[in-house]
Image 1: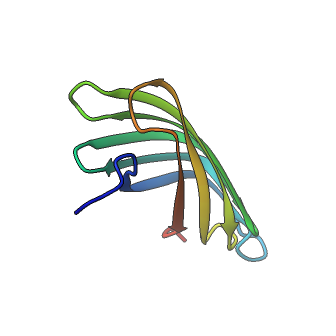
Image 2: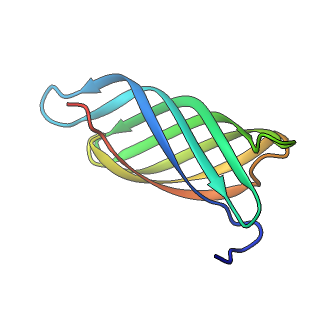
Length: 121
């Protein structure tokens, strides 16, 4: 597979631990968010762990987290990752966000797209 040298492709799995607002329907969820993931390009694989906060209400999702990335050899980085997106009452949605490196040589500065589905009822 040939990829652009600075383009990383990957996946994350996250959990939100918080409160649901469902008094008259699916209004949303607010709480702490934890995620793990992996991103790779031609010759580099970066593991990621993050912690932050999520607010998904009615039609909007806001997220912010801090993540640590490493390739388990020499690169370790710390970054902040803000997200904004569309939500259906916190049940499902689409987000776009940034990856803004603060310290180290982890993943480069980038944009990312995401989708989520809430499994707990």
